[in-house]
Amino acid sequence: MITDLAILFDRELGTLAREIAAYPDDASLWAEVPGQPTAGGNLALHLVGNLRHFIGAGLGRTGFQRDRPAEFATQDLSRAAVLEAILLATEEVAATLAALPPSSLPEPFPLELGGASPTVQALLLHLSNHLAFHLGQLDYHRRAATGDSMSVGPLSLQHLAQPGR
Image 1 (cartoon, one colour):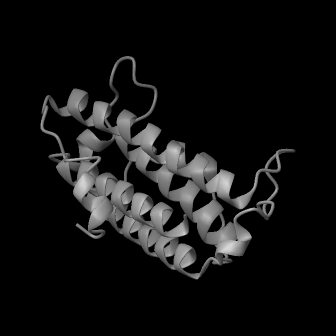
Image 2 (image 1 turned 180 degrees about the vertical axis):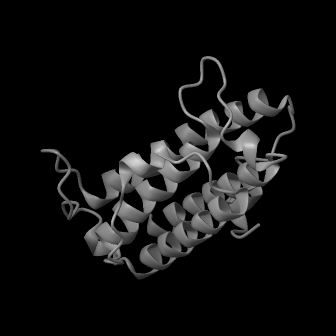
């Protein structure tokens, strides 16, 4: 289960990086799109903060301190800076999941979650779904903000058999 989750997180974080790289310039990353409440850059920062907080700090004890309001307030980072943040999150998620013992999956998740007490496995599945949900929003934002209907190749089945592609 952990190996499969690691493959999925790697694939989706790779998609996140390709989405950000597909924006033609820094300004379009932060463009307002009618009907879309969150800019692409903010979605990316939110995903990075979420994964670094719950997986990196929660399970990997990285010491990362999340600033959730800044994930949505920031509007001026370059695509290169956002890509660096994605790379750091990708490395933290991979390292944490590689070190996670299978026996921890049925245990309660170690961070306070506002009264909820899911297992580690349930929260990892939730985080995977959360990542995929926001990737769809990000893809829509990029296409609407730029007028470019190009796909970045999400959901590769080949990646499931050959991680890192």
